[in-house]
Length: 465
Image (cartoon, rainbow, N blue to C red; front, side, top):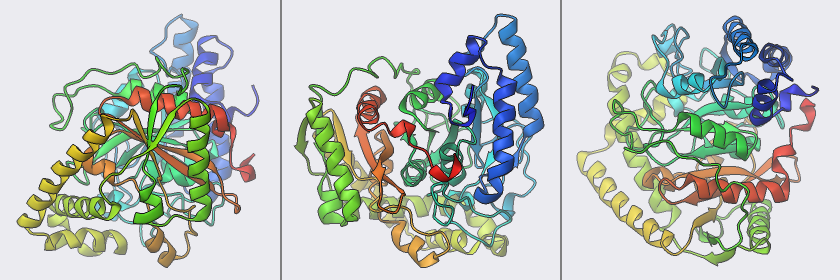
C-alpha cells in the first residue's frame, strides 16, 4: 500500500474491510503527511491526532472481530470549523468563539461516525463562513495546494485544500453562496451542494437560515456519493430539513450520459459575466465530450446572474445580521475586518428589501423548474477564472463574485462542482452541473461520465507528490 494519502475513501474502505489495510496505518500515514505539509497550507485549526488514532485502533479491532459500522468504516474525514464535533472547539475561525467547546456532534458528523468515519480534526474556514482570507484572525488562512501563493476558495477553504493535498480523503463543508463549490473549483476536487434540506444543519453555526447547505467534498465522484449517502436524511429537529429519506445515489453511477438531456447555460459565462478564455474553452470541452458520449446537448436560458446575485445578497445579509447583531454591537473589534464589513451591511437592509427578495426568489425557482422540465441536468460555469493569488486582497475582492454558484443557493437545487482541466498556469479549471430537487443521482451520473472521460480523479497537485 503506497501513496496512502491519495487513496480514495472507497478504496480505503474496501481495503480495510478486506483486512488488507489497517485503519491505524492509514491514519498514521495521514498524520505524518499533515505534519509535513500543513505548516505550508494551514488546513487545520485543531488536529485531534490522539483521538483519531484511538478511533482507528477501535475500528481495526471491530474489523478483526468481524464487525463493520458501515460504508466508511475506518476512513478519515476533516470537518469545517463551523460544524460541531463533540469535545472540540467550534471557533468559526473567529476570536468571537475562541474556546467554544461543542457538547455534541452535529447531526452530519454523528451520521459520518455511524457509518464508521474517523474525525481527524477541525478545518480552516473564512470567518463565520463570510469573511475572505484574512490575516487579522487568530489562525492564518488556508492556501491552495496547487500553488500555495494562491487562494484555495472559500469559505470551506481548509476542506478543499486538505482533500486536494491528500491530508484526508473527504471533508464536510457548508455552502451559502457557493462555499463548498468554490474551494472544489479552486482546488480541483468534487464538491456537492445537495438539495436544500437534504442534509441536516443542526449543530452547524448558521450564516443564512434559508440559504445554508451542508455538503461533501472529495477527490472522486464515487467518494462523494458515499459521503452523501451517509449524511443525508430527514432531521425533525432542523426546521429546514426536508421530509425525505436518504437516497441511493450510486445506482446509476456508471450508466453514462447517453440519452440524457443536458441544458448548457452559456449566457452565464458569455454574456452575464465574461469568463477567462481558458475557462470558456474548458466548459466547451466538457459539453462536447458529453455530447460525443451520447448526451442531447441544448442551450437554455435562466434569469441573469446579476439578478440572482442581488437576491442572494439581500437574503444572506439580512439573515446574517439577525445572527450577528448582538456581537456586532457589543464586540465589533473582535471580528476581522472583512467579516465585520460584510456582516454590518445587513443592518441597512429593510424589511421591504427582504420581502421583495423572497418574492423574486419564488419567481426564479419557478423559472428553473420550468427549464428542468425540458432537460435532465444543467451545465454551467462555477468560477469564471482560476484561483487568484491570496496575497493580493484587491484580486480576491475582484474575483470572488465572478462565479455562477449563488443562483442555486437562491433556488435550493442540487449543484456539483468539479475539475474541468488545468489552466496554462497549472491551476484547476472547473465546471458545474445542476439538477432537479432530490435528483442527486442524475448529477452524480453526469459528473462520473465526465470524470471517467477526463480522469479528473487521478490529477493531483504535482508539488505534493
